[in-house]
Image 1 (tube, helix red, strand yellow):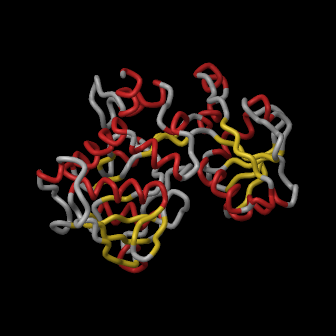
Image 2 (cartoon, rainbow, N blue to C red; image 1 turned 90 degrees about the horizontal axis):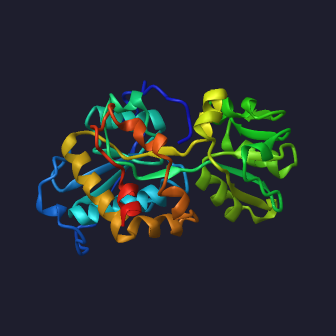
Length: 309
């Protein structure tokens, strides 16, 4: 999620608030060969997956994970010949669930940060949340300059709050909840909205009455970010799966890279309304952030293999 770092203080949240339900994937045909190697999960044969309800990235229907990250983890588990068990909680609860080894992995567009990388094991990059602004139909915002002088709605605490004051003449209009941002847009109280990109696309589909248009923004250049550091919030955000140990991380990473190469990742992104070209690529200055933190020199993200083909 495009939020500033939230400290996982609710250590017991997963036990108190989680709703657990089994979902078998063992009867389906394996597409990969990683299932031949044992994965060190909390429970043998299971992958306990925790997340918060945040569609279209993550949700639960009938005990099954849904949304982009849900579909992704279901596909990975199938390839690993593991049954998925879901545990629905809040953001702090899902992080602490992994950290205390009550869940194997947390999903749901979790941004990679250096701070979080110290508390668990991130997989290789799953996708990149590109900078997206929602606008009225016909307001084709493509660059940061197009937002000059606009009233821009977002959620208090989101990192976009740092970016808006860096745009000449723009006014940040803050709301406590994403739903409040959408209603402000519907009522004409803001000119544009900054939310996680698939949320904008999903809202446009769910609320055709408000005539919300999805605009992919050109990412700020290194020179722009150097001059105005707050604009870094408009760079593509690295997302990855947040795993509890190296065995789980390694197995998940192997399948993520395979899904990039065989077209599965592009298919899943397209199915939720995203553009694979936008979600599967990021500038080198973004992907290189991991080197020296939780990746060694010479590491390249899954997207690099696509570019070399």
